[in-house]
Length: 150
Image (cartoon, rainbow, N blue to C red; front, side, top):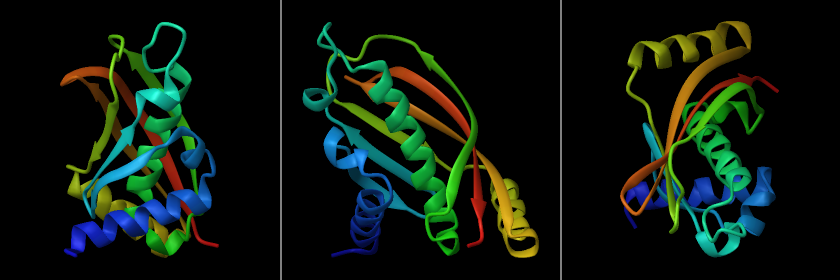
């Protein structure tokens, strides 16, 4: 097993432990490394009456993906992470499984996040998440996450 596979399995275990809805909705970690997370949001468990991904499931999965990214950035928070605010845009119906992805690109923001966590015991970071279905961008999400020392 390579390091990214191990990271993905550890993250899947953490999500199941901290966020019980993960099991019910069938959400699985596809990939995970210190700067990106990708989750599977299966249509079968999350379909609405139009046979598309339910907006509530998409919102939960996007929130969860940002939470997972924050967890990877700050494992010392031991899951003590909350969402402070968010914004979501539903751009098109998703007629197949969703791939929910977050990627860290602002290294200065990460450095500030780590510094604040160490010095203040509390740190905030903004995470952007996309949900793609059939190769098309279906949902765009932005959330501010707060990690707290226990």
